[in-house]
Structure formats: structure tokens, C-alpha cells
Length: 234
Image (tube, rainbow, N blue to C red; front, side, top):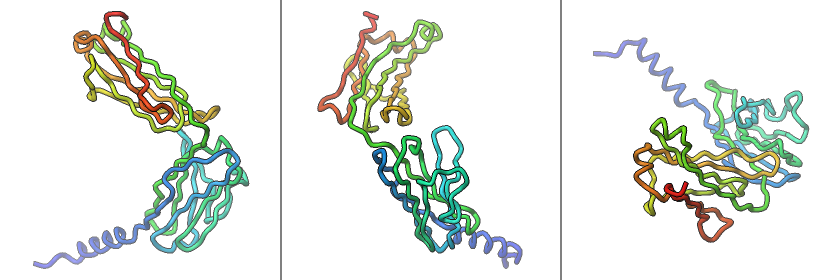
């Protein structure tokens, strides 16, 4: 039994689109630079896109903003320290004299062939001197315990670089379940990061143990920074 002609047509159309999706490879995925430095971000298309390329800047919690179109045309209102170049399959975005407000994630996008496709993004951060985290630990509130839950929170403030890890221990035994970590974006004033790590328990589980500890590992210290409290002493 033959395949209906209209189905073959649809299949061919689908295959054509699948094959023709243009891949955009962006590099680097992340980079650190100091104020005043020049930054370059590269974008490679899997085929010639004839300069139909745009660059976008996306800041945390905001929509992407167009910086460059047609590979090298500056969008109205965008500072002249941003510039684009390239042709064929190779394109780049340059940021001269880096400013603190340039901290963001940058994306390239081709609009030569539908579907329009994006690069994976480049996260740009400001480089600064290493800073050790200030670590604090907090027991659950009385109000939360009254609801049957218990959250123990470890706060790490004003550290750099961003890489940091936390280990929770209850009565000396590591606990991995129920842990949620959240890192802030780079602070616009001092270029540091902060992080919270929350250990979520039931009230019954919390009250069946005594010693709660968070151990923080960061490159600024050769040994973990340890903070703890004894529930019976709170």
C-alpha cells in the first residue's frame, strides 16, 4: 500500500525544516572582565546567514533588549561602546570600556531563515578581588513551626568568585534531601554574590534532632566555614 501523496509532501516539508534549522554556536558561555576592559563575544552560524544577525542584552528579570541588527547596525539609544561585526557564518560583538551596567547575558540571533534561532548565550560578569563569604545560620521561626514545617537557612553574603558549595549536617550526619540553594545575581555596587541554602524539614523531623550545621566551601578559605546551632539552646 503506497503512502498518500499529500502525506509525502508534508513529510518532505517537515524534513526540510528539520534539516534547514540554522545552528548558532556562541562562545564563550561565560566570561569575567574588569571595568574599562574590552570584551569580545563570538557567534558562529552553521551556514551563511548573509549578515541577518542581531545581538541582544538580557538583564536579570527583564526582557531582552536589541543592541545590534544587520550584524553591525547599532540600535537607537544603545551606547557607542557596543559594536558588531562579521559576515557569512562568523560574527562578533565587542564592548569597549566595560561598565558595571553591562553585566548581563548576551545572545546572538539569526533571522535569515525561519525558524529564527539563538546562540546559547554568554553570561558576562565583572572581575574583582576575591572576597570571603559572611556566613550565618538561622533556625525556623516559631510561626513556621506552628504550621508543622521547619526551614533552617544558611546565608552566605558578599563573596567572590561565584563558585561556592554548602553541606548540611544534622547531628553530625550529612543531609542532602530537602535542600534548595539560590544564588543572587552579581551586586551592581561591589560585584559580589550572595546565596541562601534552605534545609526544609517537617516539625517532627526537626524536633527529633539537636545539632544543625552548614559547612561552606569557597576558594577564599583552605577549610570550610562552619556555622551551627543546637536546637535545645535556641
